[in-house]
Length: 156
Image 1 (tube, rainbow, N blue to C red):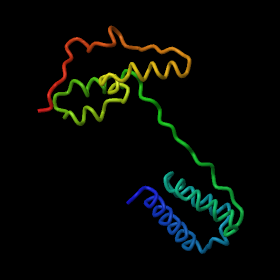
Image 2: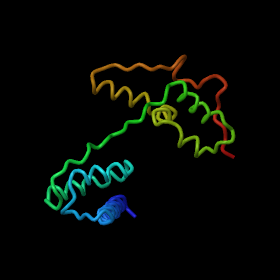
Image 3: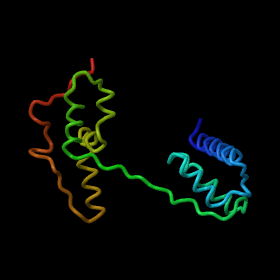
Image 4: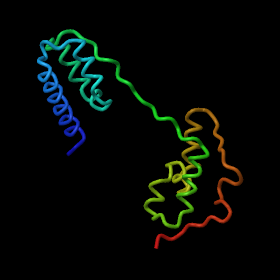
């Protein structure tokens, strides 16, 4: 099922669940107001609240419900992983002999893969020239050579 179709199906499912929730409390869309919306919000998880937001706003704009304002949507931004932890995980991808080549390649961040394929220097130079800035790298030693002792391992 494509994403737009799955998203629409989830919205219909959540709207049906909301109408069932209202009916269980002897309410309809016409009798639902701010207190009903607030009560529903407190019982739902973040995914359900975000999925239903467009439907609830449509109900209010179409005057199918009494006037209400849904609580603001919360946008979460994940905390970035600390640099030492990130480097440890990348090192594990390169050093663990039990990992398949597919897992290793999938786990490597794109800039690292681009550098390994020889694209990083060109891409960085293009970006620097387009922005009129300069670029620097936080790599110790010669950035164009592999670290001592590192060698590609076969996947067989």
